[in-house]
Length: 198
Image (cartoon, rainbow, N blue to C red; front, side):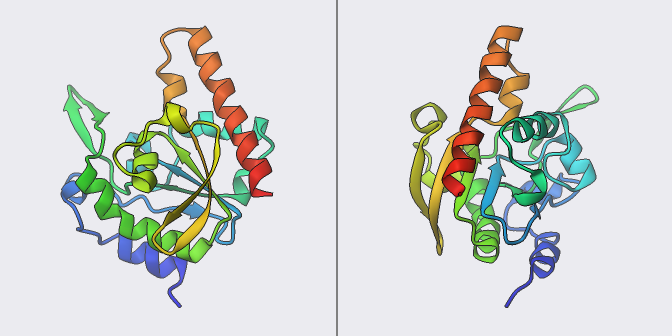
């Protein structure tokens, strides 16, 4: 049987799409390898790309706070992204996030399938539209699925799914009221996921 470390080592050399050419690192999943719940984001951000770990930047801090408020210990879940390399464009000296395209999302499905086979969670939390597209296809819209407990499959995995916003959506809110409302929705969806995962 393939171990998590063998998967992570293989992913580090991934050339399944062109994103590896500009990325600093392959950001593979991490966390409890027997977790009942997997949280899947969209792709690494600037800090994740530099550190080689998922959810360690500003959006990760929002997620940590939301997990805590929802009664979920980060040490009890497995965290990953639909796409393992950072897709970005340059703006001055800053690297700005670009949405992965369908080809890139599908190419990375190989790794997600392998992670889910290894962890075998009861429930998958989809954080944002790219994560949703990876599981449900290009017609996925967060607003149509948000907060619902649904049955889904991905490769050999079958289980429950709860979709919600990506934590970065909280940071992009235009005003404090919008950010507070988005954050409260994220926490509520995580509570739903925790209860559904048992």
